[in-house]
Length: 146
Ligand code: CA2
Image (cartoon, rainbow, N blue to C red):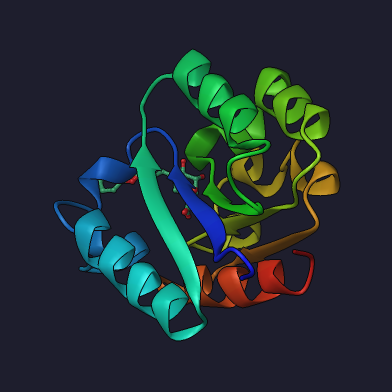
């Protein structure tokens, strides 16, 4: 029997604070609520979804490395690492599974430093400015590459 596909939902620094401050930018859903929503969506699509969050760059890099071989793809909100972390970029480039980047806010409509994503071109797709629903969109995009 074919094995169920598994997706890693990865969230980077400060995303554990979702729903607790800045509702005008990031909405009112907590990370736990977003994770439940994506988990449920994955189940409907016949996939397993494991959710992880870290505020530590090295730990995130280790999780990306470990995902290769254990998961068929990653939905990843890298938080502010998107704007400057070449180490995260290298980790994504090093693994052979597809990664879809997601941002809750529209990074192109905020401060100038947020408009740049240094990981965008090593991801198979990017979604931004769609709120928490963007995670679902990112998940569905990922399915096309798995
Ligand atoms: O829009 C996104 O999803 C971001 O990845 C969120 C990051 C930000 O640095 C990126 O530029 C865009 C930050 C998440 C911080 O979340 C907070 C939530 C509540 C209160 C404070 C921060």
